[in-house]
Amino acid sequence: MAIPSDSEAGPNPKPVEELEAESATNDEDRGEDEDEIEEEEEEDGDDEEEAEEDETPAAQRENINRLFRRLSGGPVRLRVQDIIIRGNTKTKDALIEAEVLDAFRSACSMQELIQAAGLANTRLRQLDIFDSVSITLDSGPSELPGTANVVIDVVEARNPLTGEFGAYSKPEARSWSLEGSLKLKNLFGYGDIWDASGAYGFGQTSEISAGVSLPRFKAISTPRTTRVSLLSQDWLKFSSYKERLLGLSVGLISTGNHDLAYNLTWRNLSDPSHLSSKTIRRQLGHSLLSSLKYTYRIDHRDSNLRPTRGYALLSTSQFGGLGPDSRILRFIRQEFDVRGAFPLGFYNAAVNFGVAAGAIMPWGRGFMDSTSPLPERFYMGGHSSPICSLGGPTSLLGFKLRGVGPTDERRAILTKHGEDEASTSSGRIASPGGDAIGGNLAVTAFADLSFDLPLKLFRESGVHGHMFLNTGNLVDLTLAEFKNFSFRGFLETFRSSAGFGIIFPTRFFRMEINYCCILKQLQHDHGKTGIQFGFSTP
Image 1 (cartoon, rainbow, N blue to C red):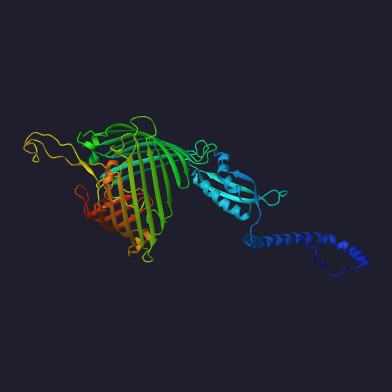
Image 2 (image 1 turned 120 degrees about the vertical axis):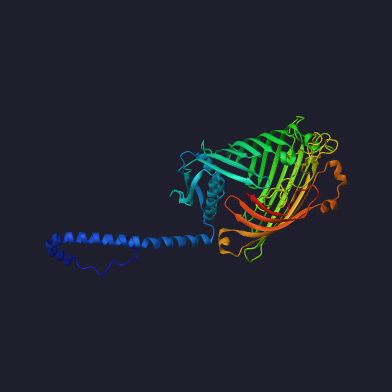
């Protein structure tokens, strides 16, 4: 060990003559003692190494404490000299550098570098192509004081191919569906994610789609997504038509809370039953949807399945009719959804509340007397919870799917006299029901009180109870009829329901068993007081 320059060398040295005499006297014994001295020196060296090892943790703690004191004392000037990437065998260095460069570029102190490292780590993990990401700040070259090297260690996904498969039920539609998806990550090393999904619904919906997403494309730093889908939906039971879609969707902007997408979709509406109402028959056939859709979303709630505090906002604007073709659907659609939650301070109780509204109107030649496209209208009802997802004015517990709002009588059936007890004397039976045709203006609101149940088993598993109150209204108005619109009449025709139930949250969905009581409904609505089951996904 080195001796400090200001330490003492020991007692006063002896004269040179004595040293020479002692040296001569000890020459005979020196040979015998050399081996013992060497052994003692080795033992002393081992003791010193053990002492140094014992002192290492304490020294490290002292260094860490000194670093914290220096960081808390004020900014420590430091800049990035180099970014070193290790562990990527397939992923391009340019992709990783592009994701983290903005975070480190403006950092000029140790404190800012630490914050930038945390932000860069989050960005790399969001690519969803790494199993782990680690960022270390190392000292720069000795000839460049005040610099640091950023060392990024990544572990690429061990299995780039993943898949999911499941069976899901929709009690309100009395249907089941089988759904599956495959995802291939980082095929070409640009963070590209390829996926294919399929769903087969027994009696209602079937879908096949494939897409690719890129975190950035050349100089464009925003993510890009492209998706092709083939969709078939059966609405014969509710609205007497089947819908087939073949569409292309391109994500143009996706940054933070903003999303902008372009959709080009060929659509065909058909009626195999030949019982559809006049409103439905007018829109049967082929059409083309060419639209831009902008979405602004913020969600600061502490949970999607059981929020106890925070707020959320969704605003969606859609402009359809981009193109000269006469079959292009021309409309403007706008919807808002606002949610809030606050705790009550006992039994983990919390109040959730929300208001949603939406409107759609056609545009173009003769738009004052034209109607909006059926699939783009607002439909209300179903057993899905209004708490989980931000979906606009659609949910109203206690009412069947598409069970609220305007309807149009289906075509009557002619039969032979006496063939059916419901036959009239003229041989014409009554209409088999009405078609739900949706509305151009929709408003919903809800309030929900959630609380823990007394059993410990329920509290530990997250099972809890709730009481709720829902209300909403849906009307079908053309622009020519808006001048006669009565706000008072609109408020007087609000439907409402109330109830209570038990909620079983899981990792993937929220299951509810509710008792719903219909407080108000109109003549053609389909509401029912009783026990209902609901499944909702965030």
